[in-house]
Amino acid sequence: MSDRLLELFSQKALEPTWDCAAVLRALAPHLPKEVLGVAQHLKDHGQQARVLMALLHYLSSDEDCKPMLQKALEAVRQVGTDRERAYLLVALVPHLALKDRVVVLQEALEIVRQLKSFHEPEAILVALAPHLPKEVLQIAKRLESGRQHAEVLSALAPHLPKDVLQVARQLYDGHARADVMSVVVPYLPKSDRRPVLLEALGAAQQLDDGRECAGLLRELAPHLPKDVLKATRQLEDCDQRADVLIAVASHLPKKDQKAVFQEALQVAQRVEDLGRRAMKLCELASHLPQDVLQAAHYLENDANRDAVLYALAPHLPKEVLQIALQLEDGCQRVELLGAVAPYLAEKDRRAVLQEAFETLPQVKGGDLRSVMDKLTPNLGTISGSSLYPVLRRTLRHHSTRPRSDLLISLMHLMPMIRELGREYALAGMIRAVRQVTTWWP
Image 1: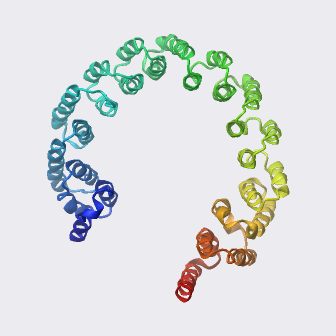
Image 2: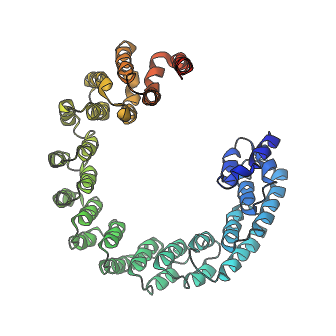
Image 3: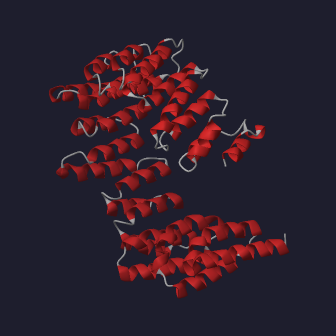
């Protein structure tokens, strides 16, 4: 097997497009010894190191792991790119003995220190943060962008909360400043938390970008619900304001939640983008089902309205069922019936599913996949004597389509075929397809 794998991976035609390391890592749990044999011949040191590290999880013997670990370390040290070499050194650390970790971590840190450009080094620094927090903090101060500052300082927050807070307050980027402050709060003494949260809230409100401000308000909502609610009402964009209102409502006292959810609904109905409006209605469906149902009627796009009805199905199954039965489009009707069925009483569920399956022959080939995704979990509730005529009519309908379309339809109908005839039916279907394509290529 190892020889065959080696032959396959040595084919030059595969080199430009195939990520050998990714494929070998996927094979590692199943063929560890064979993958090891191939990995030893990989010319790319980075790929070789990644495969050897993956194999460490699947070789139980220490006698196998120790030489492999040494081989992986040697491969990493020969990687030509500084960033990749530093990243792989840090990734190797959890596998090393405690006495060896400090040496390898210092080696990776020294590489980072010598980097002339700090373009996207945060992944390495984030990985180093738990091991060498003070050293990483000094390097973090030299980073160029607010995003980089935020990612590295957030990783340092559990280890050096007070130092991170001090650096965060000096950041020019308001978004990064507010973001790091909200992350560091849980690691501060309780007496210091609220002032820092209010400071982060103030930084968020000063942002010119409404979307960034709304994102930070959502992060702060669990900690300062009433203050965030007041700040949210100052957002001009209805889309952003509705988002934050929905996020903050759940963190308010019970007696205040419904009023804020209703406020969010009123704001959501003023969102001009109907797709975005539908998303807000879906989020509100569990809190204000009757109001959301009424609002869904004003959505002109069928797909948007259907999405809201799916969200309402667990909360208003009877109302959604009545709407589904009135739909003229076969695909929409079947999908909605399948979505609402699990929430109906047992006696009603069978009748609804029977109706859904009876409509299946009307569904176009391109829609079969989404329809069967909804219906497949319910196959066991319908008797074979009821399913068989449905499958027969559906196959007859799709047999008039081009062969390529029919084959796709058969693929989506496989769960129903398996339910009726188990593996024998599937084998018979595949045999029939082969015969037909042989007779009429």
